[in-house]
Length: 293
Image 1 (spheres, rainbow, N blue to C red):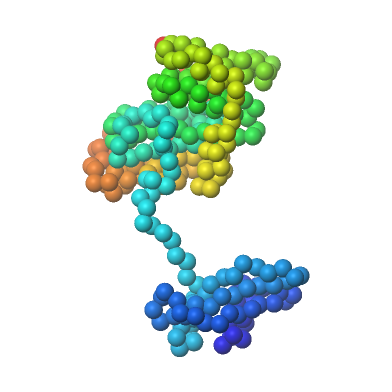
Image 2: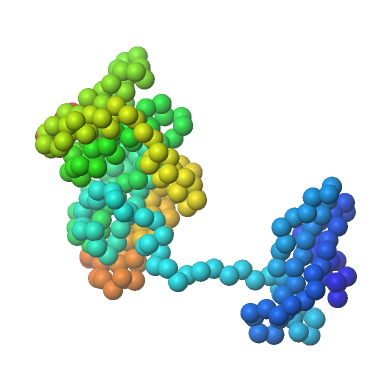
């Protein structure tokens, strides 16, 4: 039996001849009619992690079995806790969590076009939450994430006004010379000014901005990586991941399906001819509106 198992694994997986394969003793499995056996591979004195196979009771069938836990609501797999939302209430049937980079032109395009369309179509049925995923190739993205997070701790409205402004004017930050120092000063000033307009505790906000503590942002980035996020923008619609540029009809369909699963009725299909597109390579252009106005 062990010989038959080894020959099958070598032929199906193209195991190199210098690898030795060890077949474990069959033991009772949780699958009726099958025992479990462990298989390990060794080469150069290094042992692989054991792999579990299923062996039928009549010893004529070998199978692999992967078990997935689906006991948790997918909506709960991607946390929106402690982040300001836009659109519907915290208990909205559909929550869209977007991992966002404030220096990302694709994120800016989505922010300008897609999300307003979703809020107009679904209204209180959908809540939108941003979480930070600043990319290494964007010099001031981390500072923008920290500054906006500092403001979000005291004012959700101020947070969104600041995010709106930064996404609309990202190409202008740093001036014509694209100075990182100038971009950082501008971000800090925008944050403090918006905090003043929102009547937050200005000393607390200023201290947070000055400290530039990236702990929470890096924790969010680590969580995003475990969810398979590698680029921005990345969306999770009640836990279902959506990457890249896709027709907006696909987004509508995903949201409609999530609403139906939650026992809700999706809105009637739009009949308007003009439909917003998912983000393209061109940066968005919006009127120069200061945050808070």
